[in-house]
Image (tube, rainbow, N blue to C red):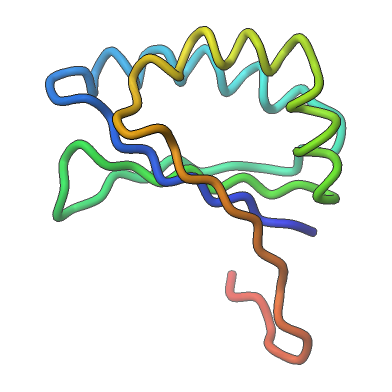
Length: 102
């Protein structure tokens, strides 16, 4: 399993609009082969920042399957105008011998 972590800095005064657009985008993302689950969480210290956590079966499910699909273009059209600066996205994997919490 691979965890995608996206730091999302939303333009001031557009948070509610972003959340509404994300509700639509999450239906698209969750239908992609290899998608497992996701969370969107708001930063307590910075009201314009959120973090998107998406679990994918493999890195390629995200980087090739999703990003190479027409569905990615739909999500991009829905969400990318809200970010300033553009979202920072990185991928993580579990450390062997350290159990997952939850």
